[in-house]
Image 1 (tube, rainbow, N blue to C red):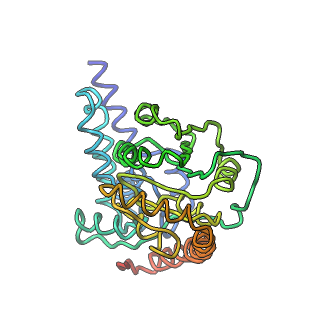
Image 2 (cartoon, one colour; image 1 turned 90 degrees about the horizontal axis):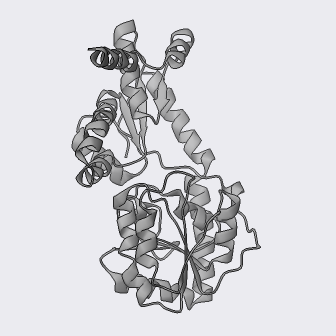
Image 3 (cartoon, rainbow, N blue to C red; image 1 turned 120 degrees about the horizontal axis):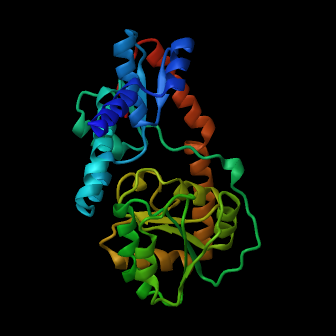
Length: 330
């Protein structure tokens, strides 16, 4: 009985929302709420209903909620499913109740429209700061050196790298340097280590902090690759471009949207190892092409994904929401 009461109390606490945020909204009465938290989104809409006020809520969607959840679900225990499923439902509810969604790539916008056909949406890509990315020397690598910076928190993303063994195996003279991105729990990193343990040309780097460590690694590398099974707008691709490095990424999700084929690098299907090998060797064997792709990549990333550009876009959509214009923009 006591356990049931605790569950009910906890449920009421969730419904009532974060007290600090609730107080701030009540006192400040914003004209628009822009959040990347799906959980906050539905709580805020519930508070609107209870407190009888209306504030347009825009949700910034940074990942494929559906594929990530159902991919995780297949490999989870019954207990884990029972504990995690309510969080997924809350996230889904946050999207369903949002007045507008801003996915981080056109591919994710199409996925959002497939699940919520009438939901207004507008693509807002991930932003990067060009001023933060400049050459920093001091890291000594074996050459030719290929950098791979990737988080391993979602299995579908990691799967692309696990399949990359077919490429590494056929390029024994190329050195691949693998490191993780953010300081978060890298759940599937042990799978990556086990898959590449037999290759002498694969090196795992630890202690590559952000942004200085990333700058050092990219400065010392000849090429950046991102073999991924699921990605929307990975900032590592944009950061490598800002560091004047040619980039090759998997032709999945939104990755092809941030790589200009033949201009800043190439996107390649995961199921085409020969295509990967051809693109990698072409760049590593042609220093003039490599420099050209890197220079063009720097200009492309700074012009289209710099924070000044993204901030201006966000400012415009917030102003439109405040004026009651929640339109759909590709």
